[in-house]
Length: 361
Image (cartoon, rainbow, N blue to C red; front, top):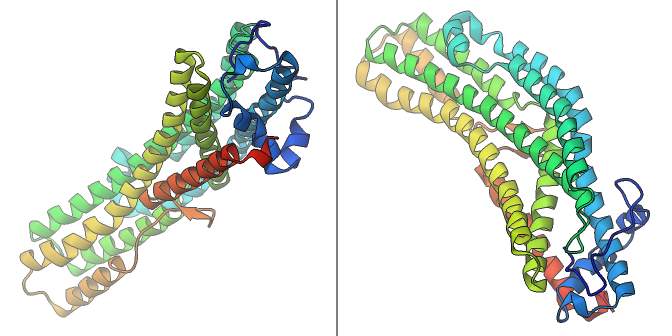
């Protein structure tokens, strides 16, 4: 975010979305990519810079922004490719649950086909939003900021947040189904209607639910790219906020940048919390029923039910139930801590670049 100099607003030369030197900056040393942001946070005010120097900084800053805002465009074809395949795979995993507890699946179970269509519509109809906003703000060249990048940034934010809402709704329905299955199990246990065959049916359904949970992550490649973009964008917008505060730019623009940085962090927290709720419901609900409620309702059981009870309690107590994402990480609350640590580390690196003269002289 560059302040307006004495010579009027500075327009940044671009060719399309990516400036001519964007790829060279991306392939060059790291300190060259960040030197523009570093110089912004040093010295008095930007209006004291010469016009030539300001043009140079503007062009390099535009290259950094262009690289970031165009990364997210690869999510659209990935969503088109992965959503139908994920829906088919999840439907296949959910089929065994229909055999014994089909009424619960119909009432509160996950609906992967709806998820697939929602993501497809999101990826398809977000393009008009980009075009409309592009026409509206393309000519707005104030505060030295290239507003032609704003529609692309809004496109990225809208697309990723709708993706977050879709995945969160999907995980929420899965957690609701697991909770309803646990309530049905507890209801039959407390009513004294449990038998060895019925307990075996619950155990089989729980194993299917466990397999479904640990393999249900829809669009794993898309989520991996999404997390990379989330970390990058959150780091960049947080640093941009510090830059704008330092140079005393427009306060409204400052608040917009701060809100975007916060929203990226909130989206990660919401997504990981929804997945954590699924894991906790599948494991803890059934484990508590087997270890507390069952023994209170059935102080004495026959040998067959005793064997089923021990086996059921054993498999529910083994390890944590976690949702993996393509084998790279798990969607859980600890992931939020890891993301925050990564963002904080990158900010420290950028601030170190700021305080070192050798990176900008």
